[in-house]
Length: 259
Image (cartoon, rainbow, N blue to C red; front, side, top):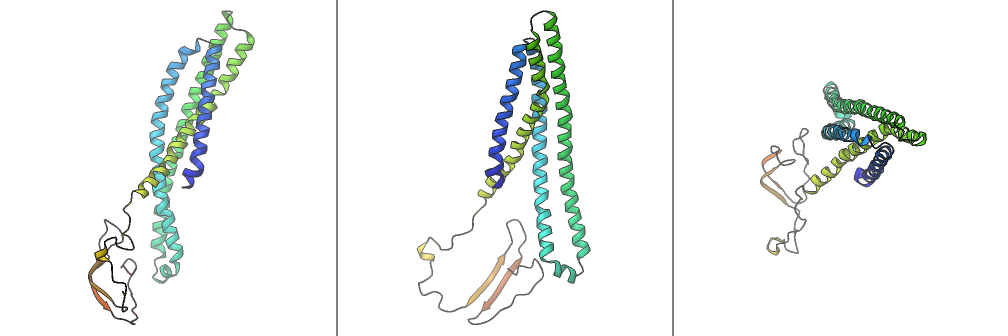
């Protein structure tokens, strides 16, 4: 919710700003040096190809990073809360090894995400330098042909010097939007989870009488329960009667279904 409420609006705003800046730069260079339009077409095709390849890869790597981060935090919190029990059973080494495995798995995904950013930076630098070379070469040719004044030549070259940063910024913002959209996907996933039953039955025939309960008696007949769908039953065929005014204690190992 924090990403959707705080990060996404800013990412969309910066994306629109950076896209308009790139369009402005290309327009100024093309207007100053009309021959630059010949170079823009193959550059745009190459740029879009890099964009499509990087965005899909970056989105999947970000999703893997998010998926591997949650178990890491959960394991760390459970270890802190149950530190005394872990020490009592001499399971410190096992929990430490599990924590290290989760950290390594998360770092592996995060490292590949950072490497993909470096891959993008190298190609965008090459693309930007090629634009500067093309703009400067065409400006010199146009000056020799006598079709460009020194002021317009300087304007074209000075705008081309900023194009590398702008192209990089556009892809960064598109990648930022794509990766943060994962938060929207997760919210949508949670919103479609099956909900629990209502506290009170809507069917009048199933409602208990107004005088219920008349005594504090609880009876289980063949009761079974699992932590979530897809897991094995933590409780199987439990039959028990708890009479009124009785005090009952439940003992069992972790995961036995005491809750």
